[in-house]
Length: 181
Image (cartoon, rainbow, N blue to C red; front, side, top):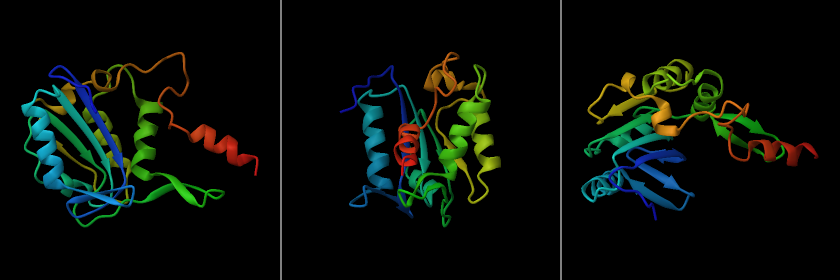
């Protein structure tokens, strides 16, 4: 259960499989655009967020926001209708990709280009200009221009003491574990 309230900033990052207007979860469950939009609208009505930011990396990702009417939501999608996303960073020992191109460029921005003044517009344009395999799009129901919203308001400040404070969860452990053969 998400313990958010009317003052909460909620960030949702989904990387999964999808089709036109649905997302697969764990290859067994499906969430439709209607169900997701209804859940977000219910959260708005019940005062469960102040602002919500959704980053969605799936095939046909932008179709997932077709029914989104809830206010104060900003979403970035890795692909448009009819488009697929592409895998990145294949791990030969595991026999699968450990991330996708959109996530790779998201983390590249966070680790190499993000600073205290970086905005939603900065990360959106970075993704749009670097993800060549699909059309990165956004939906803005915030009521404010994306260039006015600093990423630090959403994700917190980057820890200057740590070199990779936005590293992929588990990537380092994956590499250490499977480097041993």
